[in-house]
Image 1 (cartoon, helix red, strand yellow):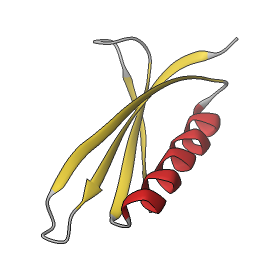
Image 2 (cartoon, helix red, strand yellow):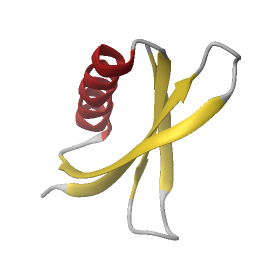
Image 3 (cartoon, one colour):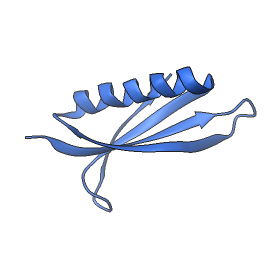
Image 4 (cartoon, one colour):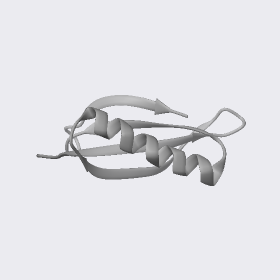
Length: 73
């Protein structure tokens, strides 16, 4: 059975300021699957924008999320 995950995707501009640019919701098998899916979204974001970026992913429903990890590119 799949769990619900959310990934918050951030870009760090040349001045060092982070900004949230996208929030992605998806179904995943486990934490490793969530890491992989977050990394894919970051790679697409980096190709489009060219800035440094990272994503934080969470499992669960709004208000009850469990923090997973941060993926950086």
